[in-house]
Image (cartoon, rainbow, N blue to C red; front, side):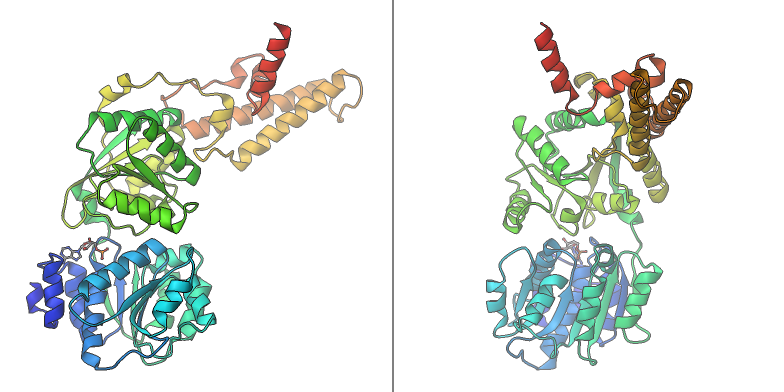
Length: 493
Ligand code: AMP
């Protein structure tokens, strides 16, 4: 099927040609005809499938057909999305598709002043793209009302629920007029989402599902590098230095702090890059994204939430600097490359404590990720010896609850032992019991370190039980104690 065969008005056909689409994607082919007839739609599709045009084109067509006009401080179509990046992106699509019509669009989201957004709403707008919090805020301020709404789209419903927007969504839905066309999109459809959909859609909606995940994954060339977490920065630097064809590189990591750290490492190596995450202002995020899109920077480092929905054409390489705990996130991440039928490369770094995540990801995607170029390891600095402390910390730099408990038990035992020696307070344990408990705590600790490392061959695992002084060595590695030790040593010298 070609776009010309769809009953879309000339200005929309022109716009489709102007943005370079020739044939509708499967979700477009399935949805557009039914939506043009005014039916509700339940769409199971993720970003990258062309779902924005699948709902935008028929909504624009019906807005043109209706012959109605917008009233002040109202909107005729509302698209609700979880993040500002997605909202901006979807509004950009509406603008592009409506460029040869008089249809007006605007976008509202939090994190920026509401003055300009309120001004844009004064005369009313045909298409309003919004995040839930700012929408409710502006409704509360009477800057906009939903009473004239004709089309309602809830996009990325599963992510909305993950991000805790369920109450906001219910509030918005309660304000909608009864007579409206509804479109509901989600990448996954667990029971909870289906229940929500049934409160929004009219009975018997058209269902459109596009093959999840499998198609893009097949087009993505994947590589895996097993590397201890302390050398991930050096490995990333080396790969970027060796491969000039890595032109538009998206690096995913778990934490905001981690993202900033990667940017520091790359900037030091003269690589142009920027980070986007929740602590960056909206303007900084937009600036970084804009610079990345027009290739003024080579690398964009992002956390998952910030990167959700960002649509950048021609991402050549996606790096999973940290593997995500939620294995489906891996699919979302690598789906940023190989878009719209193009090829792409996804490179994943796996440290010993991420082996179980790797297994989960390979199971979910049914793909065994092949190992990358082994000669690269020779160009890296030698592995630093892991300390008992660093082994106990997960890749977020935090200790798990069990580890923290084992360590607290160990500290208590040590205290009891030392006080016993001084002949003061013995915590009720005989010295033998104290030592036995201590040994238990140590073996619990060694055990948990073993679980974290998955007995992997990556690193030299210091085993506290191998040394008669394992407990003292452990204490020495506590944060802050290095500074105290240096001070003591300098006093002794
Ligand atoms: P979406 O899933 O809506 O985020 O779209 C993903 C990407 O596919 C965007 O860059 C769109 O511009 C592009 N796209 C959408 N529909 C088509 C089409 N029919 N032909 C080619 N590219 C498309």
